[in-house]
Image (tube, rainbow, N blue to C red; front, side, top):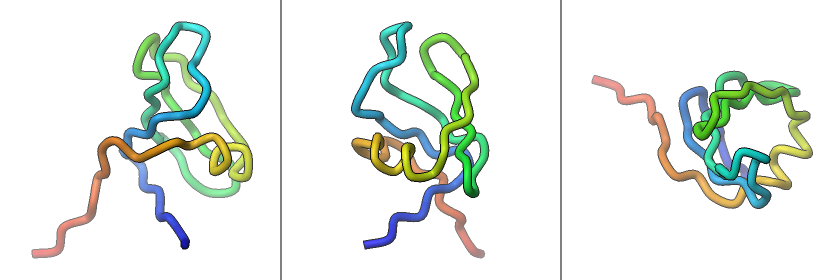
Length: 67
């Protein structure tokens, strides 16, 4: 099953960030994912395979709504 990640989605990762938060906002997609920690605001770049392996669930999705 292919999961589509979008900019603005909030995901929960398997391992917590050193600040204690496990919630991240996706700020960039592609071969690398840009993530922003929702606990401390730190921004990191993660390779796609590592990101997809580490995601536990999508908490909030920014779905595109057509009118």
